[in-house]
Length: 553
Image 1: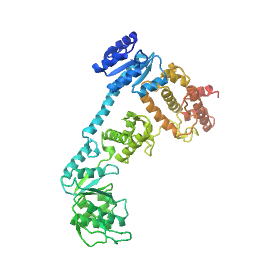
Image 2: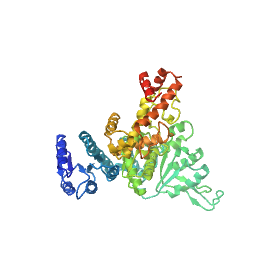
Image 3: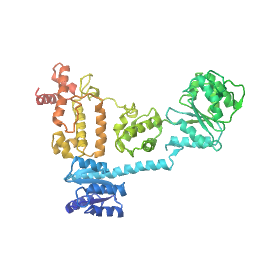
Image 4: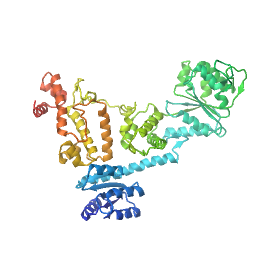
């Protein structure tokens, strides 16, 4: 049973809330001031606190700060008859889950309590992810606990115990070099020796031979002294040949000799030198196909591919995305000196729907960029729209609805396609954005939001219920608002993309101004026929007639 503490110096308020919460099946404790509340928090297991803000000796903000200092997992909801947007922002920045002005709707408070307790479960799951990372959901620098990665870990353990050549395959960015390092670090006889890497695709052919085998003084122009090659440097250790599929045919012949004979000859030299190295290769190409097309030597392929470890793409690693995201979040928060400690659930949803063609490396770059640019202590969807990955997630590619106006036509010619505009859907999208912006500016206070929109609190509540926005917390409002603003930022200002100001906008007037050019252009395209114009707008003829009358047409 969840335990809720009510803190209020008003006895009647404490009694009303106690009765209501008891009926809902919660265990309830009462405190008439801040000190009594803190004493109860220290003695009992309190899941959620509902506290008034304005009280003698210790106000609700002070209670919030002290509770978060001793038991940060405790959820706090603040209420006040003297609510202001500034107070709401301060409360949310200090860690309050939500903020309610008095008087409030009892049913609304019940729903927020339910969401808050459910949110606590989500927080616990995110903490579990961090603990999983710390407790071993990784192998070396590899992070993940999906069945595919557990299989990779087992192959690493077994392969590390042998001197056999290994070929690691998989798409770019899956962590092939990390696998090679893990094998080296777990090898019983080579772990203390050097681990040397070279990218075979990033170097001209005339230089790669010198890099691998070294050269003698005077072997070619610029060879002013003897230089050891990577095979010599890696002797008794491990050499990792990345992008082995890009190696030229002449170099494949020379590498084959090293693999077979364990000897090599420096460029410009005549002496055969013995070498003892563990050879690990990697490629994102299909080497079997390369062999069939005579672009890779078959004998070399079989020499390198004694043990094959295939790295799965990130999109196939079920459950690993949150682990990796939180791992990179902690890594870059620490490295960049930022206090970004959380990824919002909505941002995580966006990431989970993305296909990640660049795999783990792309996720790493996204999180690094987000941490670097984030101004708050939580990564919001806004931070995930700053790079080239801002496109429709591949797993949930949506076809544009034939009844919704193209967003690319905002502020300009709305009838650039021969299809219905979807007048009501288009205006609803605009109305939702304005409602979210008003709530965000008002710090979640409904009366202030209504004033910003030039409407009544009753009308505002009706609209919020209509669009299912009434249950959003201030954090969720912020997430949604940032998403809407991000979409609108790519479009020029116009009737369907009005510029929001801190002073607000008259909601009804703005919607009417957005509606009029849509109707005018539909009539123009239909040649003045109201029947055809109604079809273009996706509304009935009677609805169009009413709207024309309302707009004075």
